[in-house]
Length: 163
Image (cartoon, rainbow, N blue to C red; front, side):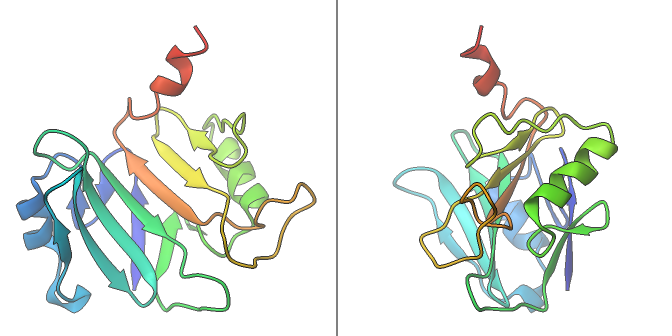
């Protein structure tokens, strides 16, 4: 199965702006039954697609504000591919993934190297793990461990602090 990131709209069939119930209803039966949390804290629905964790997040309010996908984990493979513009997010080395994004004209902000973002598009990545993983020369996992699709202003808070 391929999950294609469509920033800043979502990851079909889950789209930003849906209610949590709409997101759950949009997902095909082949994804299995979701785990749904409504309280306490942010509401979310989660699916496990052959070790790729997919989360529809409602961070305040009543509508999906972000969709986050998590790497299967060390020594696990998955038949589920997470794609952005043809690049496989979890198997393409992070530096190559970011170089491809920059070649598309996207600004890649690695000022926080554990949490790089592509503002405006709006993608955020995690480059840390508690598991044993191949590291790059700077000591970060060679591949990203999660990717988040948010709305166009999702990462604006990072730039407001810089003034």
